[in-house]
Amino acid sequence: MADYYFERDCRTPYSESYTILEEEQTVGRVDLHFTPSMVHATLCVLESFTQEDVQDLIETIDEDLVEAVGVSREEFIVHVYQGRETGVFSDNDFGDADGSEESGNGTAER
Image (tube, rainbow, N blue to C red; front, side, top):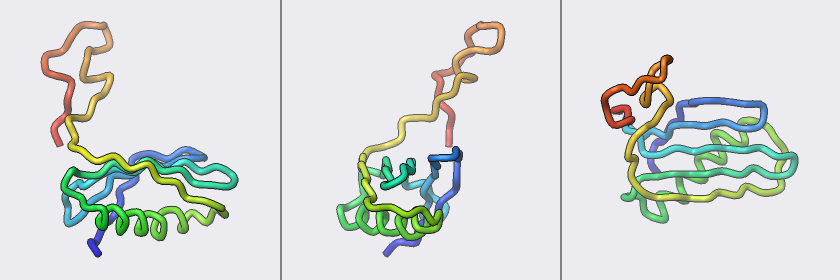
């Protein structure tokens, strides 16, 4: 099993978002949403992940993130997407405070 670790990007009272890393390399993202009876997750991983890799990662997320929160849940539902990251977009990438356009394509390099 791969050695994944997570860096939290944001947190609200009912959700959390994490970047997933393996050996200092970003391999995906997971968004967790907590309801009174279940946890919903959206998992985005690299195209190169196998079904076994995905299952291992889901188990790690369940153990390290979901169970660690200590919420009682009846079900853990995970929607999985595979692909490649095409960029990170922000309002700051498209114009400054006075509304003028900035140069660039709206993506931030990783």
